[in-house]
Length: 152
Image (cartoon, rainbow, N blue to C red; front, side):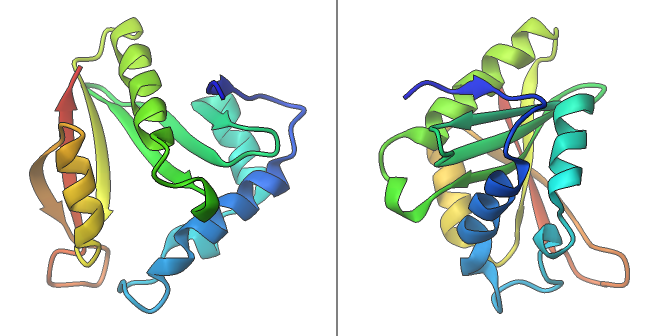
């Protein structure tokens, strides 16, 4: 299966469902709760217009959102269905992201991961990412997310 960039028309509700299921393991582990609770199919369609949305499979089994920033390509909502994990799909999507960053003249990928999700930090480090900072959600006096970067 090859990653493809999706645009309208697309089954945004199915993609939202994939993300919700893939992020379900965070429920009760992270504070504050995930933004997935506010994510709508319309939000995903808007992301496809203002940034990029890539998927693997039909129906989708993996996805990533890409958003250019001033100095990096931001990687968001990287999600793989439970049944499709450990097949290298996240790596495939991150390689697409690296290709897109180079095409856009950006020198690195950037992503954020919640502090509590240490297994994700380990996976990102194994894929060449380095922790470069920490941020706090509004109203929190402690870091709630870690920022990682990877040169392309």
